[in-house]
Length: 102
Image (spheres, helix red, strand yellow):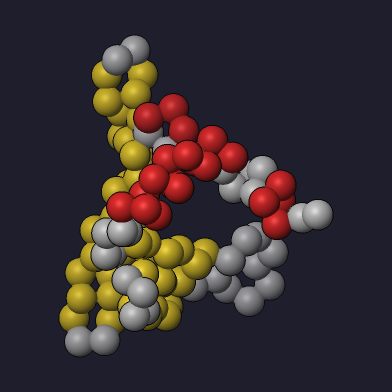
């Protein structure tokens, strides 16, 4: 993540149920610090043929925040795609409109 922080996911599967633990780690004065932590059961999940694992977190009816759907690349990207990621990473999610608009 920006600033060198890390998001760690731990998955435990039992049957068709997947428990998820998510924790962040950030740096303060050159020391690692544990940040946000939460545990939940994935409401829905799927693994795609392209090598992505998508899972969703339950949100109660009426919740008006963003949906908690997360995708993680499981299979490594081919070298050409990794090169594109490095080249265009500074654009980031917030400026992706410059790649899809006229």
